[in-house]
Length: 286
Image (cartoon, rainbow, N blue to C red; front, side, top):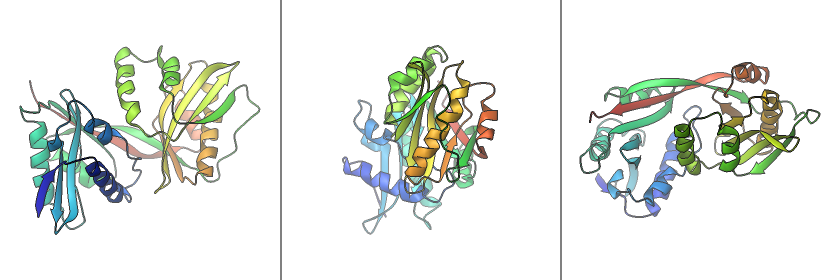
């Protein structure tokens, strides 16, 4: 067994393929983001943020992190079946050990999983991480109703995602810190399409959707809704479901949308709680 750190862009592709295979059968797993690629091109990148383990030339496991300042998004030590245990502990020792070292300077560490991923959650809890969670709701794409074109909104589906449209609606609803965080996060998301609801040519709601094609799992990642346009949610989500059906998706998932009565809207559209997003974090005292 041999270990090495990042050597070049081909290692990002190697990491991506291994992660996709390792998570394919995990319930409600998201579409991979572009965070590793963006981080590898950034000023703070260090090759020691990625550690790969090989046996007879075959990749059997890796662990990585991405960072910004003192914050570190810490990956899990993914390994092939049968290599759990000692190899994972060694990968963690190397990667977390470097991230938390004075040389790199990580102080705040975080990771996210789904509630059913007990092995991954327990791994971090055993190492002093604490958790909080947020409910995730999903509906099957097959059998959903068609878009209601008789309402007072014009609903359109567009490729990609326009962060300026999201910010236009969210500027009065989110604080500056939240907008700044999303402005950093959204470029790493590989959005497949967005749904726009307009009323008298004014933007009323804007939603960004991702689709993991190998599993058919889609997520509503970004939601911005004018407070006076709650009735735009249902036709917008039905339009998203219609587009996802065309793309052979299986499920559309979302966290609770902003607003007091939006849980009732989701329930009326066939959404139900299927899991939780579990956030694990650890801070090193300054």
